[in-house]
Length: 313
Image 1 (cartoon, rainbow, N blue to C red):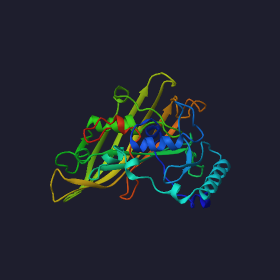
Image 2: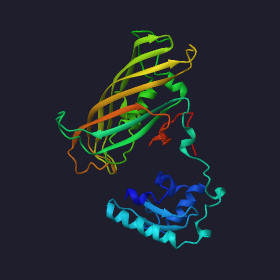
Image 3: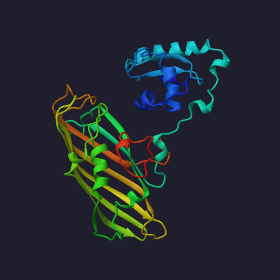
């Protein structure tokens, strides 16, 4: 499959937006996907793997996890490409597919971007035991002013500062959730009241501040449509480095950040794949400062951030 994929220009996107939106980019996708495996079924998802020309001409598609079946589909798509005329292959007019809105438009260039990795853990953690195979990832975004709120107004060694409730809630509601095996809804505001994250200044050298990060989160949701009572509790421990710019107390950036959150989850939600799993189990998160060249992937639940710097459709 890897060798075959080299014959294509590969990309990925959020199908929920593409299949429902009326943006020109969405309409372009829908017109192509309606010729695929779910074509002719109004209301059905258009999730899957598609092969098409830059013009939008459909070539092949499938929605399956079998590597053999995906390889077969790619081979069929490549064969269909060979039969398409040069005119039909051409890139579509940009005006036809240029989006009016994408969540990536709100990327906080001068803020804090955290790469969030989550995975199942074994009940008994021993160094020589194999890791649990299931894992997932997301990104958490904070604006420049929100990043500054991780520290007190004049941080000095020994100072302990609690993150504003809104920032703690952002992590607890949207990111410290059980998405290891599939997508899961956010916790609501009232579900995460018992959550607290603090930073302690352990060193300061001029504009450079070293922080110890500790805390706990709890998200607990009741039984509802397609879900049992479910939740996640974690304990956090980490460190970070914040550097002020020209000793300006309101300007600066994180140059390092890493937090480990360990906890337990229970219950299941509609799409998170826990229906047949044990009712509870351990899981863990690693939150790291995203690298400058990391893909600008919007947070899963950015629509619910409720932040004034996020651009909405």
